[in-house]
Length: 52
Image (cartoon, one colour):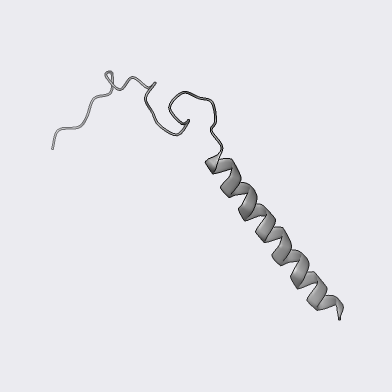
């Protein structure tokens, strides 16, 4: 095996590891109440919307 093929395999393995880590982190509950990705704790009452 030549060194170029080894480098390609290492880059591919690193990409798979990175994607797997992202998937695991997105599926793991964050402990912030309602999933961590919602805005249920934000008060939007003081925000004015522009008239169209």
